Image (cartoon, rainbow, N blue to C red; front, top):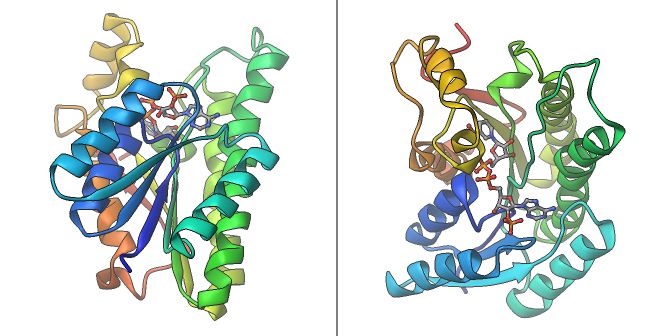
Length: 244
Ligand code: NAP
C-alpha cells in the first residue's frame, strides 16, 4: 500500500501545495479542511487527474473530538498515517492593547492546541509502526518581532518548542518531528494584507519577493523523505533572508 500523508488545512495555500507535492511523491494524501468544500474537492481532483490518490476529510482540527474521529477514519481506511503535516493555522494581527479574547482564543486553539491534538493522535498510529514523520508549519514570526503579532508569534514559538519536545519523545520510536518556518508566502493570508503593508514587508526581504507555496512544499517533501532521515527537532527557516 502507498504511504499515507495527512495535510491539515490543505484546501488552500501552503497546505494545498504540500498535498499536491506529496501526492507527486507517491503518497495517498488526506486533504483536511474545515469549511471550503469546493476548494478541497478541487485539490483532490487535481491530484487524481495527475494520477495520484487523495481524499478530502472535513474536520475542524481545533476540536479534539473531530481530530480523533478523522484519524480513526484514516486508520480504518488506510491502515495508518506515515506523514502528518500540521499546517492549518490562522493569523489575527492586532496590537496588544486592542487584541480581543476571541481572537486570542482562536489563534491558540488552532495554532497550538490543534497541532497538539493532530500530533498526539497521529503519533499513536505511527508508534505502532515504529516509523513516521511529523512536520509542523511554524512561521518566521516565531524568530522575529512584527508589530501586531504578539499572539501569532507566541503560537508559532509554541510550535517550535513542541517540535523539539516531540522529537525527543518520539525519536526512540522511529518518528521524526521538524518544523518549517516560512517568511511571507503568496497565499490568501498574505493577499488579505493592505497593499502598503505588503510593499513595506517586501523591502525587508533580501531576495526581493515573497515565496511561492510550492517552495515551502518542496522543503516539506524533503523533510518527509528518507533524505532527511537524520534530521529531527529542527525549525528550518525559509524566508528569503527576511529574518537576517
Ligand atoms: P490559508 O491560505 O489561509 O489556508 C488556511 C487553510 O487552513 C485552509 O485550507 C483552511 O481551510 C484551513 N483551516 C482553517 N481553519 C481550519 C480548522 N479549524 N481546521 C482545519 N482546517 C482549517 O493559510 P496559509 O497562508 O496557507 O498558511 C498555512 C500555514 O502556514 C499556517 O499555519 C500559517 O500560520 C503558516 N504560515 C503562512 C505564511 C504565509 O505567508 N502565508 C507564512 C508563515 C507561516 P478552510 O478554508 O476549509 O477552513
